Length: 291
Ligand code: SAH
Image (cartoon, rainbow, N blue to C red):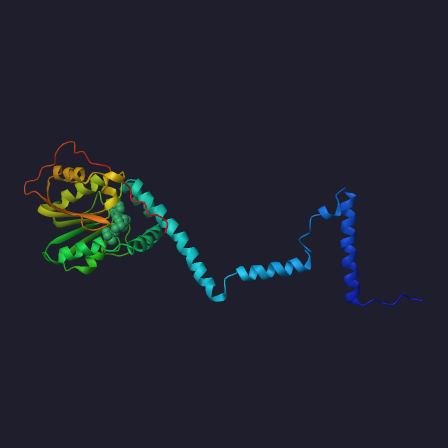
């Protein structure tokens, strides 16, 4: 008599059981006790698998949270990229920075997105203080904004402004290393450096400002406080002012009331003369912490 035909499902079950038995046999043949046989990923115990799936699901973000998690990860990555670019700008020459951004102008957007994020935590924006200063003076003055970033000065005052930065996606911004601008000598009434004395060769930016400023022209500098804090490895602000005075300027005011930055106002002497061997202090790089 023919053996009764088993159903397809029963056959699968039997073969599966047999498969496990055979595996046990194989492992003991190799001299391993059955318990030590590594579980094959193809057939983990069914109970365990269900539990794993349940706990993975619990750990997974809910649908609505997925995009916010991705946003957080993106923000973290671009924050890291910003800090890397920022450190680069503070530790290389303007010429190297210019070449660096010229090869990949998109990096400039990465830098400025991170920069704006950092600045949003400052109680007062130095660029706004400078804009207000300009508004309260003479609208016919010609201004040069050295390291203009998003050209906020030009966008907010009536004056004629030459905006200068390493990269320009705006035709009104002159893209160059600000140690060498195309501006005419003695053509500018106000030179602004708002948090832009970044390169290790920063004195050459001030020498360039001196070249393009008219006699009695203004030099307005906002710099990060920590860069000029001798108690924390920063430069001595007196030494910084003295070097600029030796370049041919008078110090008109030094505003230290802001928590995050110092604002200096110098004026080029009517008959200015550059002293020999100016002792420029090294400005400490401003490296932002991870938030
Ligand atoms: N002044 C702007 C931006 C400050 S960030 C503001 O206050 O909002 C500093 C800017 O200086 C950056 O945009 C950077 O690209 C620019 N910068 C730094 N070194 C430069 C150089 N050698 N030549 C031109 N721009 C420079």
